[in-house]
Image 1 (cartoon, rainbow, N blue to C red):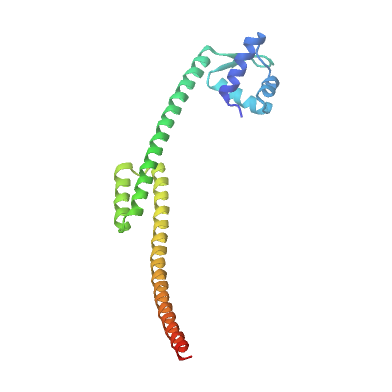
Image 2 (image 1 turned 60 degrees about the vertical axis):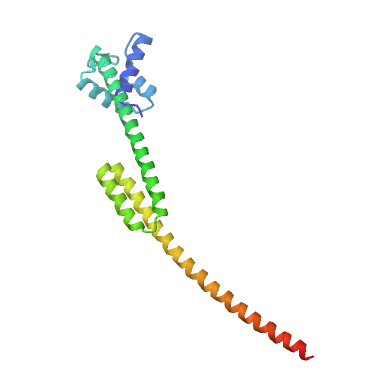
Length: 189
């Protein structure tokens, strides 16, 4: 959906192409929005001093020279903000990679709770509690829960292996007993 700056640009291009300002209907058609929305944008642009309008004239819109300068400076400001956000995104990704490295280390340690406390301390000390860091902390918390589930499953698996080994041992004893009986039976015949 076009914003005020888009409407301002539509007006400027129309004047350059046709030598006169567009009507509200032409602006609405070009922008693909309702005439009432265009009228609202025009009121705000006039209030901000970016255009002037002549009352009771369909083509009474004029772009102020300051408006183009303002538009360019806003574009520069937006570009700077985009660059800043991209830097923040790169930083967040690097922090996420760091947390993932810590998560891998947690799997390797027998004493996971101590390491998790150290990681939380590092996260709190080094990264603060911004919204992005809270998301990373939530991911770490989820990993910690998964780690606890895996550790519990590992303990259960060891117990099952011990039970199976005991069963195998008992089966071997029974097999040996049956073999001796069979040998004894065969010798007696």
